[in-house]
Image (cartoon, rainbow, N blue to C red; front, side, top):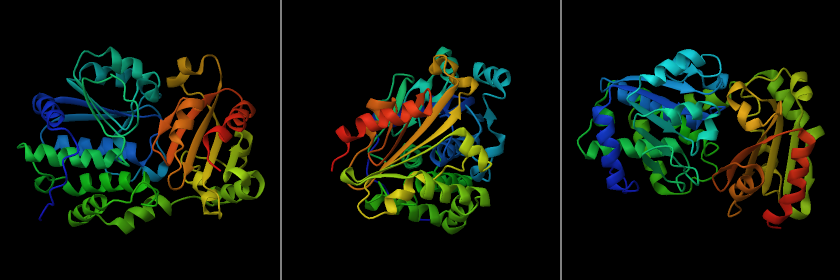
Length: 363
């Protein structure tokens, strides 16, 4: 296989610093953010396979349950779920000689798991593409201009190979690594429909296909594996719950727990709903809110509230939503795909949106 050399995005000194820690570690824990999506699962599992092939003992710890449509990813079902396995996960973390943080930029994104990670004395590496990275790790590989952490993981692996570490194509788990990376790249760009208009991304995709990735199979596993209840929920959202604000080219959908229960809501059923209004002519901004419970890893963040509102934001073209997500809902993300949380009643979160969106969304 002829691996195309990519442009140097990661600073060589960061690659060297990461290499120094990766070369000497033996017992690694990889953590990723709450409600893990394709990029979180893909980046953490790709790093797991990569390091296991080099003789490391690796455990992936996720704060809470991941969606069923990602359970097929190689070794996904071996992840430790912190809210259900806290005592065992804490023991694993305490024996780690390296912690790798993938696809999140600050401790609050992993709930109470963040307190545990911060308390550890071992070295930490952060690999992420969100704005405003914290000082959680002593090596921070952060490039917000990249559309996915999985692409950043792939680039890091390529740069490490240039410094003498094993090349992906020589590793026994090369197909598993490539599959995980492609999944994250695909999901964090809406199947390459936003934040994806530059040539090197498709050079990487080509290399992943050369490694054996079946992109059509992955698409079907992620996007064509929903329940009939989920399809009915989507119809309900569009017919009964979508509000349009034509002057600001904006759409809003919000769902209560009662409405979700009516459609037998499962983790992952809300995936993609925020994108639906963008198919309407002249709608450039979309917001989706859903009521959720505060899980045990978020008690301190919730400040006494038993209700959390999950907020997703999407936009098209040169119309960023990440500043709105950061300023109004304490979140963030990419220019065209961001999110946040609101701890409190759903009507309050909706009002926060209505009071502020006109200041951020261009007509």
